[in-house]
Structure formats: C-alpha cells, structure tokens
Length: 316
Ligand SMILES: Nc1nc2c(c(=O)[nH]1)N[C@H]1C(S)=C(S)[C@@H](COP(=O)(O)O)O[C@H]1N2
Ligand SMILES: [Mo]
Image (cartoon, rainbow, N blue to C red; front, side, top):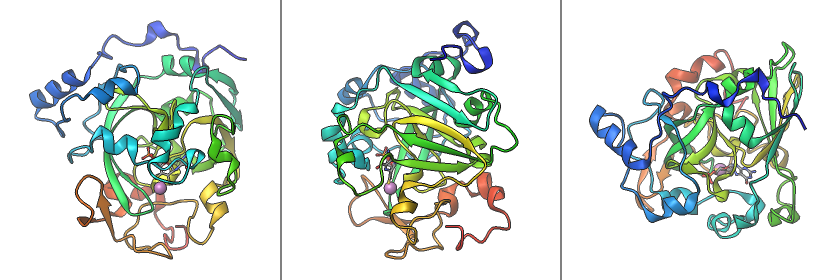
C-alpha cells in the first residue's frame, strides 16, 4: 500500500488559519457576520455522531435556508446496503466499520494507488457548506455538510486528458452491509460523473455533518454530495475512484434505465415517469407542505454552463 500522499503534501503544510470551530463557535460566527444561516443549538445527538471536525465555513457556497435538524438528516436515509426503509440505515448501519478504511484510485491518471482515509484527510482542508439536497423521490433537506472539494483532491492524481469521467464505488462486503445480500440493486453501488462535473467547485466529498464525523447511515467515512443533482448521485462509503474515457455505469440506471439517467440533474420540467418533479416536500415542514423544485436545485447560475446545448430531456 502506498503511504505517500498524492501531491506530497505533509500535515505541517496545513495552515493555522484552518481554525477549529466547534458548533457554538460556528453559531457565534454566524451571528457576528450576520451570515447565511443560524444553526440550531447543540444537541446531545451531535456528540454521539462522531468526533468533532476542524473546518472553516464557506458562506459563498452556503444557502440561507435553515438547515434541517440533525435528527431529520440522520434518521431518514436512503442507503439500500442497510435496507430499503428510510429508518433502516440509522438502525442497522452500526455494522459498518469505517476504520481502517482505504480508497483505491485507478485508471487514466499519473498518480494511482491505495490510500488510507487518514492520509487523505491530512491533505484536505475541510469546509462547512449548507447545501440543499433533493432526493429523486421528491423530498428535500437542507444540510450543513463538512467536506472538501472533490476537484482539489482529484487534481493531485494528475488525471490524463483521456480521463473524461470518474467512477465511484461503494464498499462490497455483505457481512458489514447485509442489504448487499438482497438483489434490489447490483452490488456494489456505483456512480459516475463527467470530469467537469467532478471538478466543479460545488462538488463536495463529504466526511461530516453538523460539525462531526458522518454517522454510518449518511455514508461514513466519505461520500459524495453534488448539490444540483438528485440524491442518488451522492454515493456513500466510497472505496474506489476510477478515471476513465467512457461514461461509467451507475447503479440506478442499471436497475431502471427509463427512470434514472446518468446525469440526474434536478429539473422541475422533466418528470420522473411515475411522478412529477415540479415540487418537493421539505422534511421537517409537515407532510402536506410542498414547495417548488428549482432548476438545478437552485444552483443554476453556478452549473448551467456545464450543460449548454444539451437536450436535458434526453440526457436526464
Ligand atoms: N452506496 C449507496 N449510496 C447511496 C444510496 C445507496 O442506497 N447506497 N442512496 C442514494 C440516495 S437515493 C440518496 S437520496 C442519498 C441519501 O443520502 P442521505 O441518507 O445522507 O440523505 O444517498 C445516495 N447514496
Ligand atoms: Mo434518493
């Protein structure tokens, strides 16, 4: 196993400006700057979630809506490796062991190898970003994720010009993920992005929520969040990253190609064959309160250029 970090960055190069923020400090900061969103007061569950993380707040990439509760975010999940009910992951994901954890990087890049999660984290400055999150099933959340921009990390592997896409793979181990014995999807769960989507500054590799390491049910130790795409693109518990010249397959597209495409951009004008995507139910606001779904989930000004000239009905 390679222990050398891509890019050769050592921990001492991590700058002191990456101030430690605990949740109360984040709250104080938000008050002081009059910034985007106030986080709700600390709750006991936060401590249960995992160690507190060190990060800076990214206001530019945060929405002003108030985040959902920690409870909403961590008990209403899709993670079919642990069952198909929304409550299953919170109940059963404790069997996942997130340390030791390695990520294998392969394919069309100058630097490849297998890397320890600890070594990856030493090279990446963490940011808190409050993002909208929209599931293809028409419910939504606002989440204070903590993570690092995927593109900044991927650049360390020096992708070749032939790296047009990146594929991501979840852990395959039915002893830890009992749902992988159930043939609802082809296992392991796989997802893919075009390289420019992967490199976009909004694309976040998430390692925490509400200032603490991710709980297993949200995809510990490391999962993707692409805020302008439907939630299923946000693959959890990633063990492989592969640079490729071909559009990779993705699990939901394999399972139901007419319903789930490769792009999966949030689009209120393109309905799912079985339901409308024009509106959504924001968790925590009551069963019957719906709000309009925004083009690219509200990130249109940031990402529309990625899809100029594409027929979004065809490339759904
Ligand atoms: N490995 C894996 N990743 C996954 C899923 C899954 O079943 N397995 N579900 C996806 C779907 S459909 C959604 S909506 C989000 C849910 O993320 P959350 O539970 O953190 O809200 O995870 C996505 N990533
Ligand atoms: Mo989803």
